[in-house]
Structure formats: structure tokens, C-alpha cells
Length: 309
Ligand SMILES: [Ca+2]
Ligand SMILES: [Ca+2]
Image (tube, rainbow, N blue to C red; front, side, top):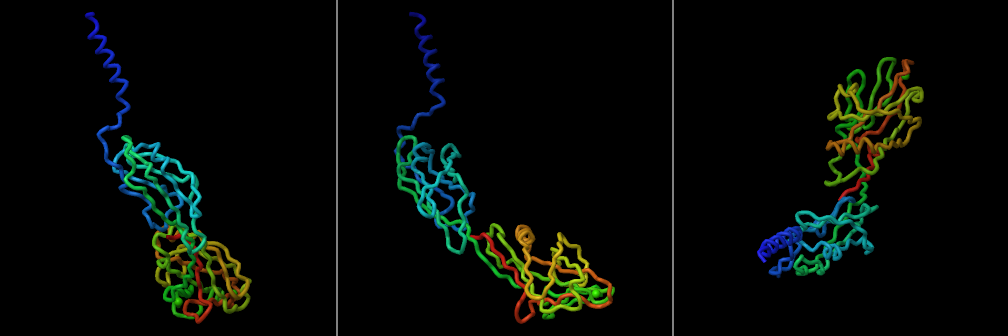
């Protein structure tokens, strides 16, 4: 008989220790939980393909019931598989799509929806005050034609002559020791704010005529940032440059996605290039006459497609 109180205390301690990890629902909680924040916000545009849906609640939630009440719907209404995680002591639900979201292949919006039914509840069993619903749109593929900047395109010769105002610019050699290089500059500040990536970029130049034997020379195109056009740009240090093989008058097309993307991603205001040639030393002028932005037609252009809001 004398041992009974000790045994009771031991059992009580054991029971308390066993109970501690699982806090029981608060029977006094009669307050319905609510959604206090949600991203992407209803009506958001330009959502990235890897973004998760995040719902923040006014109190910790019954995670199983809340996950069961959630759905993410594709633009055609098909439910999409998601994986769930919880943050802030079960007050914030992160629903990550199992596969990246799709982007619109044109200027139309692709709109996704997500819903949380009122069967979501807190641990005391109080259901959500009201069902929650929102819709958002992902990035769109948008195309732009950008014209070369008249004040920044033109020719610079090895003799230091700068011509930024002419309606044409000569690419080639001028005598045994001299040559002329051409420059083009395309502003990127017309691309939409929030542009996520440059999908494609094609440079279109127009050679209106040829001089001498242009095929006797080799040509290269270099990526550089020359700012305003001045005499020092003739020999300015360029980044990457690549051989080009024009071999005819008419429209020249060059894929320049990597260069334009690096300018955009680097926050630069414009995409600038220089074309130059070798000198065959025959003492006569050889090369091509290219249109500039001052030309009446067939202006130099950059055709760009981007993923943007
Ligand atoms: Ca010009
Ligand atoms: Ca020559």
C-alpha cells in the first residue's frame, strides 16, 4: 500500500512523456481558418513555368484535409499533379507542379486556375470560412522587329573616318593598306519588362551592291559594345566573333540568339555588332555596300522572339 503513490506518479510521468509530441486540437477553437495570402495572385500574368502555388493561412491547418481540398487546373481544366510541402508550422502550403507549366506559343494567354475547397480545415475541425479560387497566366511568346539606330550605325575606316549619317556603309578594303568596317546597333529597351528569356534572334542586313571582287576577302562578325560610333571603334576589342560567308548581294540573315540573350540577361541597353573584312592587298577596293538605318527601305533589323508576361 505504501508504494501506490510512487507507482501513480511514475505512471503519470510516463503518460505525460508519451503525450507531449502530439498537441491535441484546441477544443476551444471555434474560429474558421482563412487564406490570408496567395501566390500567384489572382489575375497575375507572366508566371514562370517553375513557380509553385503558395497559400498562407490565418492559423495552422489540418494538412491532410487541406491537401485533399486543393487542386491545380491546366488551361483546359485538367487537374495537374502537384507535390505538397508545409512551412511556418503548417500555416503555409506550397504546391509544386510535378511538371513545368506550359507557356503560350503566341500572344494569347494560357490561364491556369487553382482552388481550395471549403473542406480544408484547422486541426480543431473548423472548415475554411469560404472556398478559395484564383487564376493566373504564364509567359507568352512575343515577337518584335527592332530597327538599327540611325545615329549609331554606319562605317569607320582604318584612316579614322567615321560616317554615322550615310544611307549606306561600305564593308571591305579600299586600297592595299586601308579598309572600312560597318557597325549596327539595336536598342533592347523596347522589349517588355519582365522578359524572362530570348527565344530566338535573327539579324537581317541588306547588301545593295558589291564592289570589285568581294569573294576574294574573308569576313567576320563580332559582338561588342561600342556605345556611340567613333574612330576608336574600328579596332575596338570585341567579344566573340565569327566568320561569315555573305557571297551575294541581297538579304543576309544571321542567327544571333546567344549574343542578344547575353546582352538582355546582362542588362545592356542595346545589341551592337561590327562586320569586318580581310584585305587582299591587290590595291583595289573589294567588298559590299550595306544599307543602314538611314536607308529608305531594306533597313537593318533584328527579329526577336521572347518569353514575356
Ligand atoms: Ca547611321
Ligand atoms: Ca582589295
